[in-house]
Structure formats: C-alpha cells, structure tokens
Image (cartoon, rainbow, N blue to C red; front, side, top):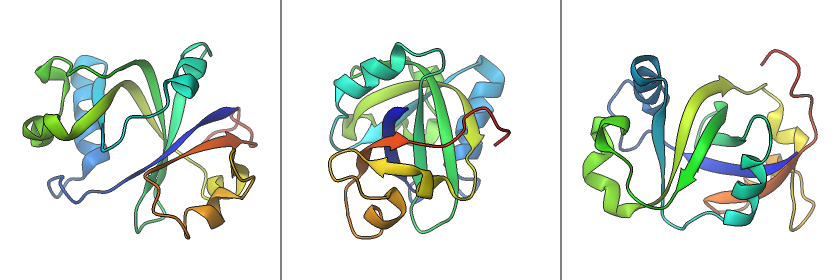
Length: 149
C-alpha cells in the first residue's frame, strides 16, 4: 500500500494532546478535520488513497514512539467548516495548506516504521525519519493491515 507518513507534534495543542482533542470531535460529529501545516501534500498519492476502500495516512509523533493510522474520507485545500476543526487551531488556519476529513485514528503497531519504505529512496522509514527534517514522506507500507493494531 502506498501512502504518506506525516510528522506531528503536540507543540501547539493543549495538554490533552492533538489526538485526544481530534478524537473528541470524531465522537461528537463522526468526523474531524485534520490540518497539515506547511507545504501541501502531493495530490497524486492522496487521490490514489481516496480510491481505496479505506484511505489512510501514517502519523508519526515527533520525539515520541506514538504512531497512528489516520483514516480519512476527504481531502481539500480550502478551509472547512469551523465546527469540524478543534478549537485550539482554528486561529492558525492560514498556516494550514491542506485538510483531511478524519473518521478514525488507530494506534499503529510498535514496529510500523520498519514496515514502511520511502518510495524515492527505498530506505526504511525508521532510518529515513531519523536523518531527515522532511515534514512528510511518500511511503510504501509492507505490513499486514488485517491484524489488530
């Protein structure tokens, strides 16, 4: 499966953390909009993901071992409706270049990075992410998505 791995942090989130606050909106609305700060993501891979039965991205928490699969149903570059965005980053929306409509976060297996390979170089993501400041990587996941994560 080809997809994208994105870095994230809780630097701007309140103490509860980004995942917790996004999950609260999923619990209330059935979805939440996740914003990607900085550069837009390649539409090519996003469109490829949207054609699958279960579009997903891998989220890598900077400075942590937390990894999550972000299951989404829509991608857009325009600002979505504010009630679907966590309150803590509504005022930062000018810095967000693309949005994902997320329906589920799923904790990834502990060794997920060793099952992901950067498409451009073939390097294992566990090595590439340590030596690169890239905010995202185009990857190929070579693990089993059928297991319980």
